Image (cartoon, rainbow, N blue to C red; front, side, top):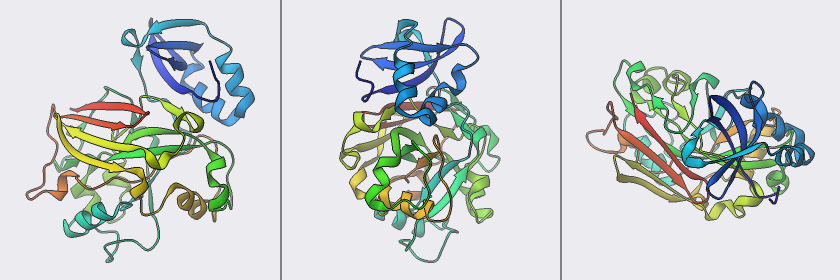
Length: 294
C-alpha cells in the first residue's frame, strides 16, 4: 500500500473503536481500542514517519459493509474553522434571503471565518438532531474540508498546499433563525451533531488537483447543490495565507471552505429540513457523507 495515497478512517468493528485506512472494499485495522479515537489526529501531527508506522501496523481487515464508520477525527482538539459566503452564487442567494447578518456587501471582500464547536462533530449515518433547534429552521450546507498537516504561521499562498494533509466531506448544518438572531454564527452552527464529517480523510497526494473536485448535495434524493471547487471565491491557498497571517494553525485543524448555491433558504419559501429527511453530500474521490435528520 502506497502510504502517500491514503483514505484514513475511524470506525467501529467487533465492538471496538478502530483506526485504519480503506483498501478497495476493505477497512484495514491499524489501531484498536482506547487509543483509536485520537489515532488519525496523532498521525497527522506525527508527519510521514507516523503515517508509515501506522500503515505498517496492520492488525486485521474487514469488509467496509461490516464496520460502522465514524468521523475520521471524532474528537478534534479545536473548533472546526469555517468560511461563509465563499461561492459567488451562494453569496448572492444568502444576501437576498434576509438571513445574512454578516455584512452589507453581497460578495465579501475578505474571507468570512467562523467556527463550529467540537461537540457539533458527528460521523456518517449519525442522526443529526434537528430537534435541538427550537426554531425549526434547519438547513444543509455541503462543503469541502481540508486538514492542516503541520504547524502553520505566516504561510504564503505559494507555499500553502505544503501545509495541507488531506481533504474531507463536511456538512455545515445550520439553524438559520438562530444564525440570524445572534448576528455572529456560532450558536446557529455549533449545535450538537450539526457538523457531520466523513467518511474518510483522503491525503493530499490521493486527491491531486483539488480544484477539479466536484461537490453534489442531495436531499431525499433530489439534487440541490452541484459545483466545482475551482469556483471558490477565496481558494485554499488564500484561506491559509489569510488565517495564518495572525494566528497559528495546528496539525489536525479542520477548515470547511464554504457551501455553494442551492441551500434551503435559497428557495421561496425556504425548504427547511424536517425529521427523517436524508442528506447526502458527495465529493469526487472523497466519498459520500449521508445523515438523517432526527
